[in-house]
Image (cartoon, rainbow, N blue to C red; front, side, top):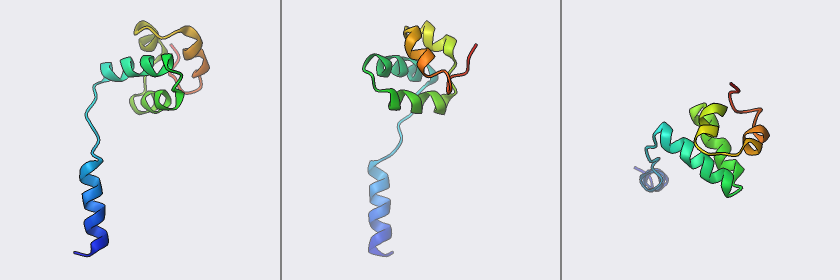
Amino acid sequence: MGKSKTRILRKGINNQITRISREEAVNNVVKYFNNNNLSKAHDLITMFGLGAEEILEAGASYEHVAAMKNIIEIW
């Protein structure tokens, strides 16, 4: 195996994706909204297909949910 493939494989070992449940994703979205980290919230919303109702029930403000209305599944 060449040096390039070896480096790519080793990099992949260190950058593995962690497992996250839907409930943890919703809680993280609320946390990201509160910290004004909308890009990470956007990533989780689109990855899990989260709806507005479940995000609001988890404690997000209506203003944050309304700001993301183009990507959130509305009621």
